[in-house]
Structure formats: C-alpha cells, structure tokens
Length: 535
Ligand code: ATP
Image (tube, rainbow, N blue to C red; front, side, top):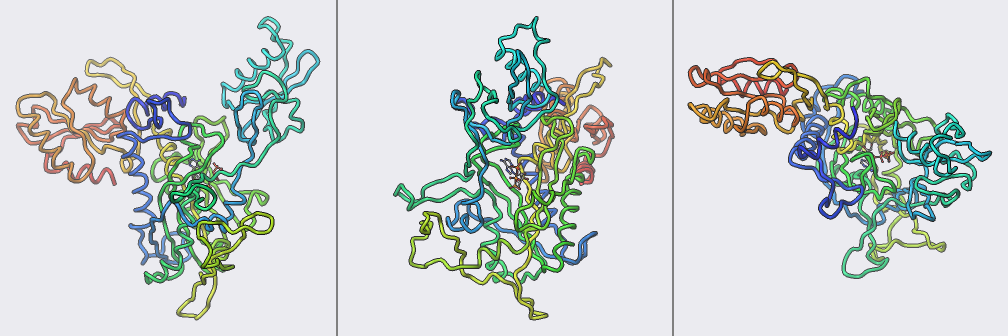
C-alpha cells in the first residue's frame, strides 16, 4: 500500500487533519477528525478494558506466573520539576542533532542517511532524509546537480551500494547535506533536550520553569505510595495510565508516527524482584497478542529484544513490538510499544535523598557546577509484605505503548483496495478500511432502500434503538451502492438495509463489509446479531 493513498483517505474522510491547517499547519502536530476520534478512543478503550477494567484478578491468565491486580491513575501533564531531574530526563533525554549552516534546517543525527557517490575523481556522501523508493531519485538528482552533470552524462556518476547512516561518516566535510548545494555545511552533532519547557505563574525566568511530561510513567511512580495507601492492592499489581505526552522531536515525520504531542498507554507493573524475569516474559507476550487479536497481521509484527549495548543502564531486558509500516523501507520496522524490565531504578531514585522543604519547589537546586542536584523525595517507597513481613523495593515491568502509533498501524493494516460488482454487475474499484469491529468508528449504518413506503420510518426506529448501544449512522441519501461504498471507506463493518420486504415482514438485511455476505434477520434480532459480531 502506498502511504499517500492512506494519508489522502484520512483527510478526505475525516480520520486525521493537520493541526492548525488553515494557518499552514504546524509540524509534528495532528488533529483527529470525526472518524479518527472514535477510532482512537475505541483503541484506548479496548486497551483500558483488556488491561485494566476487564482484567480478571481471580483467575491465573495463560503464561502469567500468578494472579495479579490492575488499577488506574490519571496524573497531571505538568509535575514538580524535580521529578524530571530524578527520572534522568533533565540530563539524559536528548537526541543528537546536526544543523545545516546554509539552509538553517535541523536534522536528527541518526536519521540522516545516504550513499557515497563518485564522479569526476571526487567521492562525496550524499545525505538524505527521504526513504523508500524516492530516496534513490532524491540522491541521484542532487548528486547530478552537485557534479554539474547532464542527463546524457549520467553514466559518469557511480553510487556505492551501502545506504549508510550519517553517524558512520567520519568527516563532515565530505557530506552534501539533505537540502544543501555545497559540501560540508552540516555542523558537528550536538545534544538537544526533547522536553518542552513552560513557565508556571506570572514570573518569567528560571523560577517558574516546568516541563511538559515526555512520558506518563513518572506520574505512576510518584503516586505509588498513594495507591498502596488508598487501596488494598497487593503485589504483584499494575498501575495503568493513558494520556498526552510531549517531546520536542527534531524531525517529526511519517504522518503521526513521530509527533511532538502524542498519547501514551502505559503500565507500570510492580512485582517481587525474584519473579520479575517471569513477569517480563509474560508482558512481552501478552502485549504482542493484544495487537494481533485486534487485527494486525502477525507477519507484519516483530518482537525485537534489545541487544545488551542498547539497554538502559538499569534495565536487564527490553523488547520492542515493531510493525512493518508502509512508509519504511522493505524489511524495516517501526516501534509500536516498548516493554522494559526497569528493575527498582525508578522507585529507588524517587526515594533516595531529600528535598529541602524550605526551597522553592519550582527551582531546580543547582550544585557547584550549575547542574541540578540529584535528589529524590526522601519518602519511603518500599513495599512491605504483610504475610511474610519482608520489606523491599519492588521491581517494575513497563509495557509502554503509543495510542497514535497503534492507531496509525491499525489504519495502515486496514487499508485495502479491491474490485466488486455494482448493482448492474459492472466491476467497480472499492476502497475498504478493514478495521476490527471492536475499534471501527461506526459499528453499523442503517439505510432505507428508498425514501418512501414506510422504509425511512422503520430504519429510523432501528437507528434510535441501536444508537443507545453503539455508534451507528443513518443515511438515506443517494444510491444504496454508493452508501455502501462510503461506509466501506469509513471502516463500518455492518450495513443494515430496510427494503420493501422489511415493511411487510419486519426483517432487514445485514451486509458484512469484508465478505459482502448478506443475511436477513428479524428487526428484533438486529441488536443481538450486531453485538455478537462485534465481540
Ligand atoms: P522512538 O525510538 O521511536 O523515538 P522511544 O523508544 O523513545 O521511541 P518510548 O520512550 O519507549 O519511545 O515511548 C513509548 C511509546 O510511546 C513508543 O513505543 C511509541 O509508541 C510512543 N511514542 C514515543 N515517542 C513518540 C512520538 N514522538 N510520536 C508518537 N508516539 C511516540
């Protein structure tokens, strides 16, 4: 599937719009339209239901080392600045960037790639941020221009096969930047912190500095004790949270995949250190199965264990669930979710040290080098087992998913083009979004075949009845074939048609979006039929 087709369908049918589009848009920010908001909400609701509210804490689930409890939280986006100092984000949450001195463009160092090109006795590295098939065209065109070659002399230009990362290139003087016309315009890589800063209160300046959270996880850690004290929850248990996170990504791109404002669905699962490896395995598999159960093809998903040198210093294991997004080169995958074994790093960091109660809570206390001091809350965040009396800092397994990336993956997977006969038997191209019924924005559409003979009245009655249970849509405009096609594009799994026979015998047809099979059922059975199919 070509990505352009999906992007245009998303805009045309109201799944996704560029933020502030009438002002030319703002890079890295996206709005969900009328269909998109339902889709994303259904995905978040499915996650919350399957992981939290619908979790059966009395039965041991397949693969789980024991039974466990799940609970939820909803924390603020702006937190005490010390949280980000202690979590490591203040000092370590950065990417390397390079700037182009002539175009003033900024790129993420590890995302610039390219090929060595040879012509006229010179070897240059032609850098690009374009991927897939268009990459070759881009590098070729720019290299030709650089060497001042005409089309008829194209054979004088030779490209080396390897598509390399800029990080592998030693001398920046040999590099033709992604938008540059001359060599050596890119600066050396520099650190760039990804947290958005803001000011609390009326006073500008360091006094009021705060950050928009770059992940929802920290809200869970700092509330760990509150949850223990306010519920009767016992280890092992998980705390879940969904919500907005913000990262000032240097090169937001690939539609919503890398945005600057996005939503996460995170679980921090607390367990005894001795059992943590087993729980890590459990969550890896559980989360992978969640995506396939909602319709992502297993052959487009991989579970990638991080190599030892990729792991954070505190982690003994991290696996990414990755999807073969169509905008990536063949054989490459993009992260949907990370599952990390975080040990006791977070709770221990928030526990150790002590913040001076007289200090201004919004000022990061600096040490003699002008760097904020590493100081936790000084509060005891350990857990005491009532049965054994053992006191310890729990270990944490963190399945951390992105709601927008999941939505994008489900949209990519769903996009299908096929050919179907119309009413006259002529083959017609059809675009159909094969979204799983559980996440489809509209569950069923109700059509009177024609706008007379009592059909609209019956159809509206069915609509009003179903509307109390799910999101359904009423449409009486245009030929019924066109109404079907509009619903196919919206991903609506079922269309209910009221025809002449319906008025006589109180039956309607239900058409299945994917198989195109039509069955006739009694009006009284429609709700149960749709409900059982949605699952
Ligand atoms: P990446 O390597 O792609 O930048 P990450 O490893 O930094 O991602 P995490 O910090 O593990 O990501 O965040 C957990 C999840 O949050 C990711 O798996 C992803 O689904 C989502 N996420 C992270 N950054 C973004 C972003 N800029 N836009 C959309 N979703 C994001």
